[in-house]
Image (cartoon, rainbow, N blue to C red; front, side, top):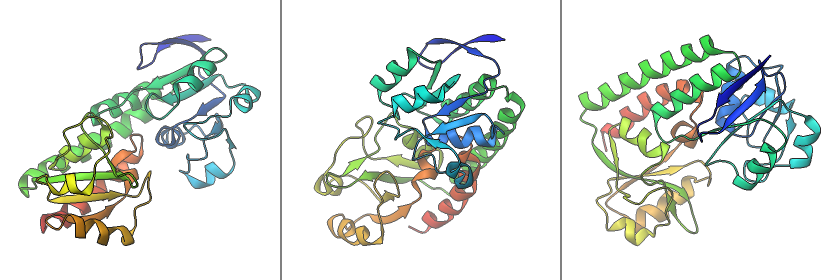
Length: 267
């Protein structure tokens, strides 16, 4: 049967329900779909949709999140494409939407992420499974917020996502919300992902600089150069997937942040 849905950009789509040929073009949402039990339905994904790795290896790769292979997607004839406003290129999405139903998410907070999980669950006929994931996520992050308060975690932080030029996660981002939930205040007041110099960072009240593993792969060798330029802040590496993936990875993120909070208490 056919069923209508409205995505998070306010666009109405009509799909054959439940969908049987799904392409996901966002890594965190691809992982979510697999965790919802859609092994047979997912026919295509991007080269960055690496979790779970065994599923990634056996699916058709339709390009990268910012540069999709439109002709290949057309050949696959999906009955549903699932994307995200920030992750995907608007021109690609608009072209695909002329041929296929395209459902888009738009996420800035943990609450947005949980809403997305529920909405995707309804979209693919997996509402009970989505509800269970959200139960785990909600309980886990409520505990994390409580622990951050109990342990008086109140760190002023900067979260670096890129080098040459340095770029940070600012306000109005999912990463900023995850920082707040773990007792950390972002020193960057600009929205989205502004460029910043180490000199500018040195002039903030930053106590902790987090170097993300993605999209730029910060490593141990980068700690020394940044520490030398911003000597009053502690510089550490963090797992970018835990801070920025907003699907079922959030269940795994809860345990990560329990350990992370223990680590930063002493700083």
